[in-house]
Image (cartoon, rainbow, N blue to C red; front, side):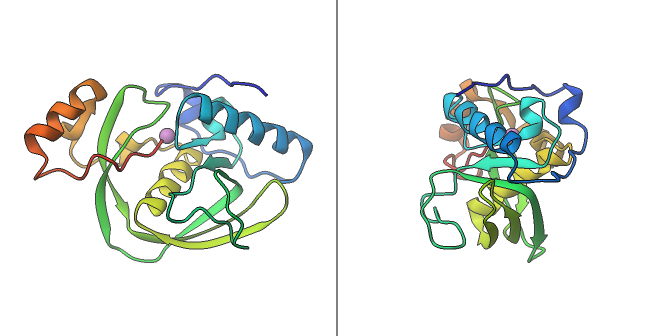
Length: 188
Ligand code: NI
């Protein structure tokens, strides 16, 4: 087990597209994924991309939402690790929701995301994943795969007045909860 150092916004490793992984089931990838999961859990995050731990390869880990915690074969998994993920949007419709990011600590922002998508990839065990998801699950996938393309959530925001410090978040929600997305929708 190893807790890895998390790169913060401004670090060049977060800005560059990551490279495809040649062998998703290699011991190196298994070790990377195990360390990424340890790091995500330690930081209390919902997801983590390899670029965030200074590894420019196309690997993400994330916790599927509680209402959809399964892999393609129906196994329940608390954390899904995906190598070489690919996303296909299934609608033009977007919705706004709050996100946070371990590479942008202490902040949250409202980000528009496509509401329905298909994602594919392979696990470090060699299992093919192919899922069609919507809502928060789709948001988490977009956030993590964006990391592999050098994109952080503030770069997706349309209204930077909704980029706020966590210490102000509860006050903002109390004052303007009718106009803003629900506060529970946070990804990492
Ligand atoms: Ni993030």
